[in-house]
Image (cartoon, rainbow, N blue to C red):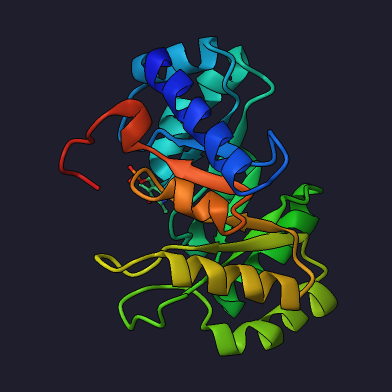
Length: 221
Ligand SMILES: *Cc1c(COP(=O)(O)O)cnc(C)c1O
């Protein structure tokens, strides 16, 4: 596991260098979904601190104990968030990467106020405008940002996307980068095990890597 972590870090460094980017400008979000605490601990022991989970309930089973042992962990929610789980999600996750609709924006704003917490959020963009995928459509992003930033005062730090499967992801990463620039957003969460070097070349500040770090997941997700 830690061998894989070292390999990925080297690949990140190389991609940053080739893109002429600053060393260390990419954050590796280690996607630990489906894997149990015994699998996650060695990565924590190796000093890695940023993790991603896609289900609130699964994370609630694993992470309170891990966070108690490793208090400076930063946990990212990278999966869909139902409004009835917002309270729990805000309590447990440090960063919400999947803000994808107005109803959720309102629910997050209410919980941030109720809990006195302001979790940084990424807006998930449906970058390929795929009907089955969640996310804000590129053309609806300015209006959604007005709602989030101006009306609800949410701490929006960037954009997140999952490009269409089986296509060259590069133009989609480039489009997300363009949208972020146009809308004054500095952070970009894009790129997974199969394509993170391309994402780094296109400006990713956060890459979400599961399989390359923890190995193949059982069929569940
Ligand atoms: C599972 C998941 C990942 C990690 O994918 P790998 O291909 O295993 O690296 C990244 N982002 C999201 C949103 C995911 O659900």
